[in-house]
Length: 259
Image (cartoon, rainbow, N blue to C red; front, top):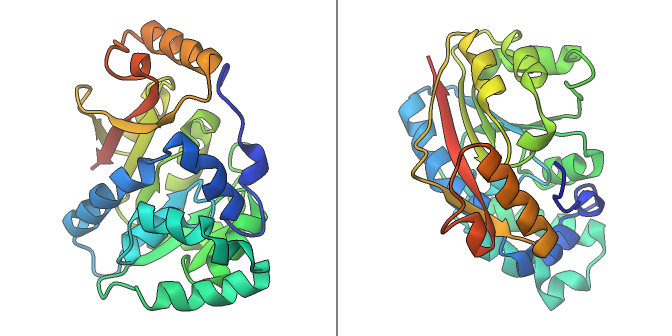
């Protein structure tokens, strides 16, 4: 998105330490808000064999918060600690296997991850956060055989970041492979239009609802230029930045799509 800072260099490292170190000063917090929403949605979905597909999953942070007795603050502390800084990636992975296993919730659900960041996927799979990983770029290609087969078990698609890089192509490609009712829960920054994706989902029998008066803060702006661009984009969308973007943070809207 025009005017938005790039964090491409932290999304595909061998482990998440740089990710948390860079985002901590910006108070990146949307996974924190998503944790309660996704847990509630899993309960409402009421499917004993439910598989969740987390879009733009990165290092498996949503899966960590969904399936473990952890908060986002816990993860910031874990990955920015002096002890973590002294470890090699291999040592960190071994430590994290035990870290997550000890905090696994008894009601944990199966979570798959989809992202084009191969190193991040490898880490999330290695430490046990994701039960399966897929790196298909659905903006450019149809799903490969493995992802197409995996979608047969997916009943919930989640998204907390990356909506600015996705179009209806990704969602159509996934839902065309679905073999059971799929719900979608997506947190989308207010500078990004979601209507084209909601229209696509409608074509698969899903109704999308959102409360425009309820927003969730995502992170602080990196500076005045990003703030100005966000306020401009929000106003172009017919939204009011007062108390939200005007106060220095991106805000997201939760879109929930169900049959």
